[in-house]
Image (cartoon, rainbow, N blue to C red; front, side):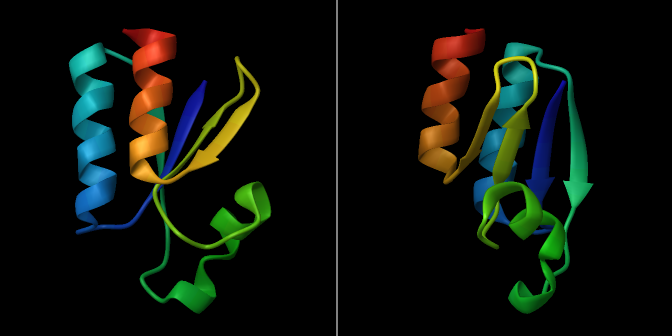
Length: 78
């Protein structure tokens, strides 16, 4: 299962969502707090508080930064 940690209104998160949907990848969204200092859920899984972050349990990958995530999705799911 792939989990996407995202923030409402985040353009980088939306780019990742668009690509996931284009590829037909099932994923679960975890909505995070708007305040950077309150994004503890993201910090627990990735060690930092920026979004987007994906966690792919099947492959064993946790990754931040939309460009890296898009490259990973292309390699793994395209």
